[in-house]
Image (cartoon, rainbow, N blue to C red):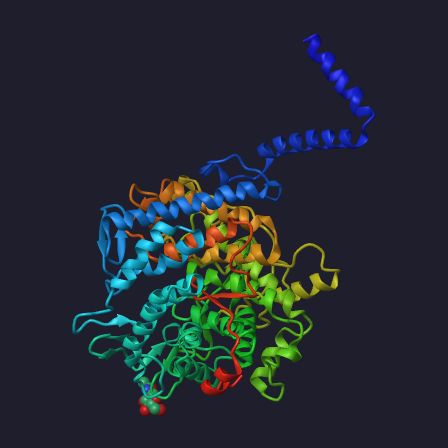
Length: 625
Ligand SMILES: *[C@@H]1O[C@H](CO)[C@@H](O)[C@H](O)[C@H]1NC(C)=O
């Protein structure tokens, strides 16, 4: 003991004469103490459910820790893929509980096609070689009377082969991609040239209603533009460009600027006025910005429609919840009985791609140079009205706030659950008058719910948009309404039985389908803001995936996220390989192989390199931008 004290005294003496070293030692002791205390006092509701590792402030973690985490994701990929190889090959997807398979996307082995480029990125050479052999052997055949769903086949199969080709340059991938595109081509047999729902690749028979769904008719531009680049074939370029021309030419006066869900595939015009950021619409909005980026920022018309769409989403479909002030994006259906639109206040997991897309735009666009983008025709009354709504704000600020606020809500939908995994669909409460709490449109200046009651009041009786303005006027300290970090609210079993209201939403669909959208946005928020909290949240989601969804042969969707441990379902979608694990991996590795200004990811997370047309291509394809 006295020896020990003596040592301590000598150390102290030596430190006295070396102020730098002393400061360093004091600093370390202080930090450790603070961190130790923090462990006890911090609000850690979400952490208690899966304490796999002791929590360290993510800013303090060295890259070597993140490298290990990336390695863990790679191991997860191998585990799941080996399960597919063992029990499901050559079929579409593994059923990871019964260790059987299902053929739900043409039966050509969709898991392989979706996973190829992730294998290339993770440098899983053995798996990749075996997968390539599978691709080579597939014939893209279907029995008579069966139809390949065009949209899913394009984003998964065609996108998967093309992106793997972009990364590895294996010529077989290009040959098979071109072969598949040719077999699918009869799908464009509508008078407008918008694709039918489905096609038989052998007989060329097509299937589908005359009214098409936005996401399914307008999410092929990236794939076909890149296919044209690498094959040199004008017909692929024309397929993409026809869709782009149709959506750019359409009249959106009735919808306020953005594309509605339903389209007449005979004459290529909007069919209704339903608006959504989620299912049935999502990727069509996504491809506006991404087509602009893929064409090395040349396709200005796609950019303009993206800006008008984002404006509409922000001013009309984004809302704030009454007590926690969570920002969410929802959809709008015109009412049959009155002239006002119905806002559903549904918030889908699928819509959680939007914060990432907005963040990507913040990074890549000159958002505050509205004249450069030339997105609003000031002589056009509807467009002028759109533009006026955000006047006085920096567009860049607003897009970044929206990205942060929505990503926060997407993350909380996970952190609020005892499993640490988010539900597939939520329904937000609008007003809670007993608590004097009102939700409302984030930027909407008028009534919104379709009733007479003003929906747009904060607790103090002001409009949310006015709250934003006064926050700005008062020096814009901290974060604006709807944007900051919130504490998770995890219900106990008693809370659930009693019917608690503390989250501001109820759960409409409580399954977790191994979906990627939230980790996709966390990845982009991390890349664009450089704030480690986004990366940290992605890690916590991966931990929850490991704890609650892993089976001996793979990973399983959850039937409910509301009880811990989660209740598994016998299903492992191919997008888990293409997207969920890829985004997690990209979030944790150090140097990215896919810089945001050089690669554009399709809606299934398949990356294509930015395209520069040569003079010869411009002339031959008649590139109009
Ligand atoms: C679609 O457009 C065509 C041509 O304008 C029209 O004849 C047809 O009735 C429209 N379809 C529907 C369902 O409205």
